[in-house]
Length: 367
Image 1 (cartoon, rainbow, N blue to C red):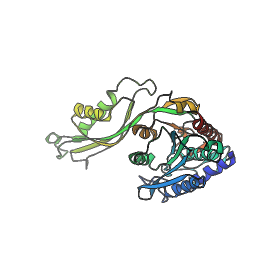
Image 2 (image 1 turned 180 degrees about the horizontal axis):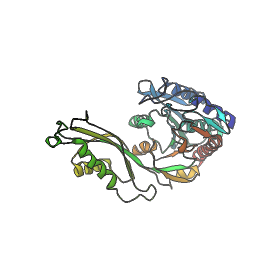
Image 3 (image 1 turned 135 degrees about the horizontal axis):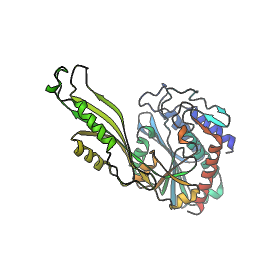
Image 4 (image 1 turned 60 degrees about the vertical axis):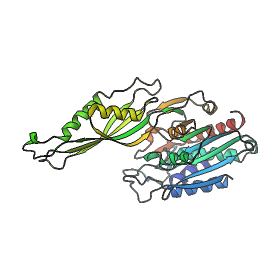
């Protein structure tokens, strides 16, 4: 596929809505089914063996497999198919307009640009008899649900999927993100005793209790020493709910907390520490582990791009958690992800395609 064809492929991907149905999607056209069908057809035309599995109703994973004769190694190219909401966008989210060297639309950067580059690189290779003579199995895994907790990647791995190296598609400016922070989302609950606000001394104010918790979490978060790549963890209180009326002392309050993890931290120990420090109830909403894959990994070296860490999390850590060393890689700048005018630079898209083609060829011959 030449650069113009890669651009058109990305336009087709952007024009297929695949917005997560969680929260306010901003469109009635939600779910990944239509995009999954397009990718499955594309892979079948390349001669890959293709399977689809619904993780949730109408929200499938797609897995295509290319096998060389006597393959000794296996890799996975794994972009996610879901995008965030289109509410508030100032461009046509599904237009795929090309202007001033940029392609606009929801997912253009995060992460249909990665999907297009990976599909195009794979297409260039599997049609080449020399590549087919290599000894590499290549899986293309289009996974759903990354934006809301990596449900697709986790479901795939729970089915026993494992490879020698996995590459999650994310906008990394064509760098190899070999380390990223994890995420622990949890709810803290304080309880009190309600009474008339005219006599607050007769009650126990749950919001007042929570104020102490919030102050303690933010001012004294009890972080471990900084990671040499990722730095310190972070913590943010993102939501608070409590009370029923102005003139009633509240008996209940809750907050929702986002705690970013660095390698070596354990979510259960963090939760236990907070529970013990403040005497509160805690409910875990989601845990995504941090990622660390050594930069000396031979597949990372074969990719031949700079390595870096990232403060965000993605499906790479799920693949690594289940035994597949992993990185994130793709075209585009994370600063453009989820924006009101999301776009990708076409030079980035085409550069990523070339890097991935070279990577696949090197892996088939040498790694």
